[in-house]
Length: 374
Image (cartoon, rainbow, N blue to C red; front, side, top):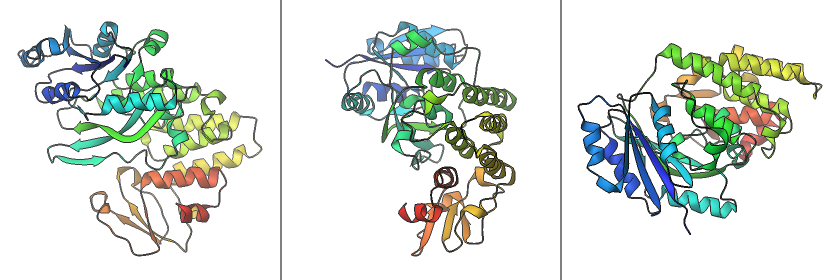
């Protein structure tokens, strides 16, 4: 028998897009679902309420005072009757097969108690341009399915998830004291030490637009500094089992390299270096820390790129100020997808460059051989 899946839609002033979200939930090819809409104290003259109520008994509707998305999700979880939780933002869209594909992935894995997540499409407004998220492309399946890695590396879009309800019974609901990182905090608490199921197929359409809820820069930065230091501090050997990493040095090195250029994770960087230096299991801890510190402090990749190979690298925000050898040509982000390189010239993007760094200097593979094979 197909288990009941609860699709929870938190919404605040959502009259612009929420009808598309609800319709996409109703259009699921998987039929055993319930749709819960939680109005988080919208102040739009009843527009959000009217749209929700127009669906009648096709949805379950709740209304509360404004408290933020975590409070709305918690109310939905408290009232859900399904065996699985699935989050849908009011401005996003599920592809019709989203739930069915994830249930099938659980069955194929042979364990219905695991958590599933997937890749996703990005819809940029107002241009209406749709593209597939590429951040997870360079990573191996065992990385993507390692529970601690998924939140630490930023692999997850929350609306792609399908989570067994009992996880919230065991680990509690979303932390309502946070406004920007409550989701990733909960993912780390739930997923670490477990194997996830990752579906490379894109199953949702995530809309990017000017009306999205944002928080003050200082609040977001403060919460993210705390979150990533907290996750690193709480990581241990059990979190890397099944990841193809050898030890905790590789774990911290991989994290450090992933975040090499993000100013918001500076506290996390320094904490990772401290952890690497404190671990007693490797004789080359100081050398590893030196390599990583060079990456973040000097942004110098010249020593890692073979001089005999030419590259075209997609430029983006996070690569500003990066030093590369003369055999690397930068191409603006929007022009990159139309570039057709000549023979023997390799295309690179930031994610692939990061994966090269993880696989080459840290895991001591021959870098030139890695490039030719990939």
